[in-house]
Image (cartoon, rainbow, N blue to C red; front, side, top):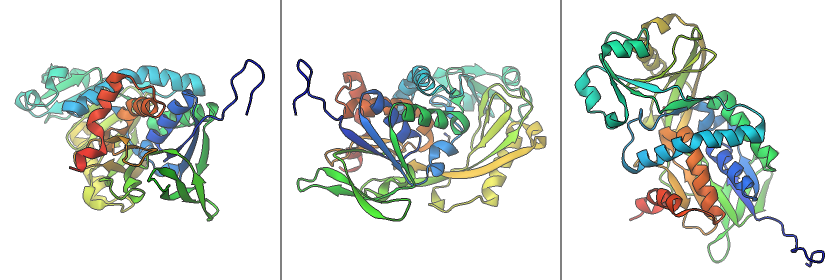
Length: 376
Ligand code: GLY
């Protein structure tokens, strides 16, 4: 085809399918669209995505990450303010980013000083702990304040803003379509996907490039992926508006206060539950006991919601990012407890390698997270 005189021939941008409409899929779709790619997101049921379930902590230090995971988490934390600004500009909606700091309480100063990320935090004794978290339970004698960590309102704000930003950038969505299988060409490269539409019809969708971002369900599409579900149950309460300024990250339970007083309480960690749906009395009891041990007065705050979901976990609890071994298919899954934190860097790294514009330092960040580490 020839274009008008003195102009390059017009060319359809290459289409990339994003398999999975959760936070990671949307974040990648958005960055690809910003780089001029034509993007189509396929998702079976967006409401079950871990991005809607999580509490939205941005907590590489409070979670006690180490080694390459800490480096990846810190790189993402550093990128989040600019990433959020982009999403807010592209969507016209606020994302609810709150750099409020996170306090990790301990029963003794010895426990505090042995915490893997202690060097990144400000050590607190009982008096300063009480100043940071008024009303904290009597069993906590020490703490670490990570003022660089924070939270984002993933459930009510970020997911919606990101979806709106994607639509604004021309990303198309097929909600209700279940991807049943990957299709390969004679040379083994990706040729497309087979899907069942919301209307129940099976059909093929050709594509030479796709990103597998199916969260806990990833191994259903590519059996060799060592990704399994780790169920988490959560609840929320309505606290007095200014009751809590910091996130509190206790052992087994954390409290995430939104600006309007909603207090998100998480989370159980139940690998043995598989994909079994629903709340359990034991899980809810664990959260209630953890809540009361951290903040006794919270026992009298009115309950709001209870919910559950499935974290996508790998054997070393790190994500699977980058090439899949199938030319044209990229991986972005397995983020386990850190999907909200890692969405920003995951989107930047994946969009960079898919569009061939990744910088050397970003390739180095990706390096530890390939599928190859589970194959030798
Ligand atoms: N990041 C906290 C959790 O997964 O429960």
